[in-house]
Amino acid sequence: MCGIFGIANHSDPARMTYLGLYALQHRGQESTGMSSSDGDEVYTHKAMGYVADVYSEDILAKLKGHNAIGHTRYSTAGDSCEGNAQPIVVKCTYGTVALVHNGNLINAGSLREELERQGAIFQSTSDSEVILHLLARSQTRELLDALGETLAKVHGAFSLLLLTKNALIGVRDPNGFRPLCIGKLNGSYVLASETCAFDLIGATYLREVEPGEIVFVRGEELWSVKALPSTKLSKCIFEHVYFSRPDSIVFGRTVQTSRDLMGRILAQENPVEADLVVPVPDSGVAAAIGFSQQSRIPFAFGLIRNHYVGRTFIEPKTTIRNFGVKVKHNPIKELLAGKRVILIDDSIVRGTTTRKIVKMVRAAGAKEVHMRISCPPTLSPCFYGIDTPTKKELIASSHTVEEICKYIEADSLAYLSLPGLMRAVDGKGSEFCTACYTGQYPLAFQEMIPDAKAADRQLDLWEASLKE
Ligand code: AMP
Image 1 (tube, rainbow, N blue to C red):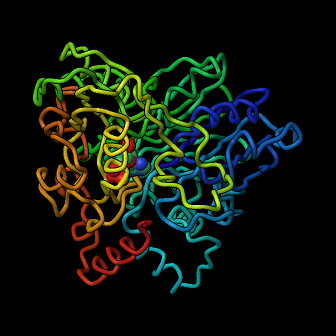
Image 2: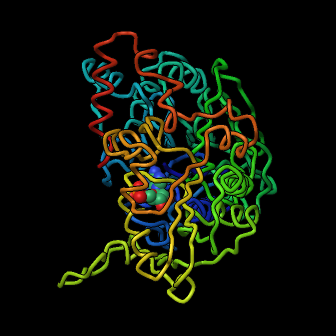
Image 3: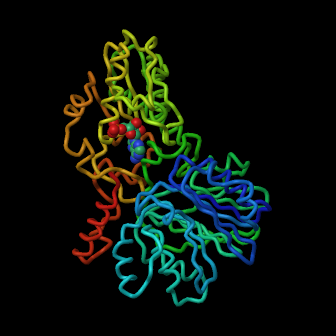
């Protein structure tokens, strides 16, 4: 989870990057940062907080030059603190280099241990810093060669942007785990995690950065280098299920199209007689519309979401029943009373929120509550950049669908099947990583780190770093 954006050859790259990051805020809300360059210097600003709060006119004015990159962070490796905010900026033999990263490296722990043994001093606990250490140690003359050498050593998920005093570089890992798109705005190339960032600044979507490709942008020119050997594609299916914005084109396909189909196929696979289809907003909305259209059961916004949760607010001094869930969602009793309701959401993770929402809908007067989930049961944690809890906290890893149904106190529960999900994302589901639903990891620690002890240590480091 993280959003990245970059632009080259623009008269106001900082403002463009600010707008791009604003559109990518859903990918990370902990910290944001930006670096710009003017041919001589690299200028950087980063802080904890939202894009709209972190930058001011004064700060943007100080981010001078023609090129810029930026980041919105949601920590999935390393702590949530200002020291881990990106861009990470270093001075090395290739000049000043700023880096932003979306994804997780699976061998960062063992690489870091090795680098530290050799005397490297790390400034942060972020896995991304390893990339810059490896880059700085390369003996090659050119930055691009050093980058190729570095990327051959790191394994896992990485969509990267690098900024030097006069160039912008974009990279996507050979598995293509995380998205990265190329757009054009007059004479400027733009790179972004999702195309919703292009829409806001009026850029045209050209194509994705290919898995294993490095794109090098200087002035008006873009060069492409196929830097890393092809491997089996493992695009993250969860980008389409939940994470990306529905108005974005991700992996060459509009996310809304996939979510609508997820809802339609869910309705075909798991029909139920009912009066109303109600989404858990916002995550269930697109699938619920598809479900309603397929089943011809009317759709209604029976739950309203407060969009401002997340910011600090003053908790009540006295105990209020179910306060936590009511902060975010509130039912419309007039719509739900006496109705057989189909509730649609994209996933059940721990089950605790879903249980409270089912209770809330019943308390609002619903006669029956049927839960339908627009992806298969979430069985296994993600090691490639999605924030999921540990396996034992994932309710579906240790409970059957019937047991989960009982726990959430629904009248019925059904999930979209894996073949159904594959059909929904484009029929070529084999190009996707589905490890969270199958436990089959395309890049396993044991395969990538042949030393069994080091692989186990890496796995321990990972489990420890997964947030509660
Ligand atoms: P729970 O019932 O506690 O498992 O929570 C389910 C809710 O969490 C659903 O509304 C999902 O949209 C949401 N959700 C699913 N995956 C994630 C994720 N990786 N990060 C944050 N929320 C998520």
